[in-house]
Image (cartoon, rainbow, N blue to C red):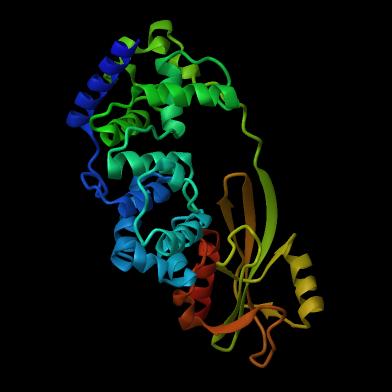
Length: 350
């Protein structure tokens, strides 16, 4: 088995040398850049990450630069990439590394896992790619490849099966070029051994693959069915008063710390009645409503965007503030507010 593992790794590395995707974070041994790239790549496609990675590192070229930054600045540079808790944890982890490790990420995966924002996968990626430590980095792509390669037909979400897959991943990692090996498995899972029906005719490991031999690769890995997404219906009010609009910074766990327009759950007529009652703010229509939809991992927002106007001397309710329209671009708005931002742009450019 050990010889077969060595053959698999050698075959995989030879394929990687021919077919590796070109990415700006590859070919370097910088643990900070590896950390940033791997954090951005969590639940996000490579094509989406590329411009954000370059922009983020232009603004925060070193870990110490990130540790010294305000959270609002970090969120602004992350704007549009989504899953903003990643950015908050990245900054929090950078502060931790600056204070406890002199600004240098440790090479030991066990110590890396103690840092905010670094889980087992990211710890393995940093240790292997930046420090050449022969440890695996097991993510969804790797689970899929190994489940097919070794014919794991049990629920991969079960702890004992996950540990089995991690042991298999560890046994495959070579002493030489462990980072390239881990990236090769990631590339294979992203480009060839893809979800659904894999392209087995292009796979360098088909000769070793149990699922290919049995013809059931499309059925693996075995995973529990995901819960159906919950749908919520919101009315988003783009409210103009003179040259200002009403906004607030969210304190809710979802999109925490990002800016938004007034939102009320339910139909527009109900939202307007609540606004008038709670904020004592009479409003009038300032344009045609529009619809927008935003999909989170386990949640869907169906939104009606209402352009509204009120008198310039109205005091802001609760934790809202009136902000000049020209200053909106300096705030960090989530992608869920894109349609509302377009409505605001139209409202103030009339």
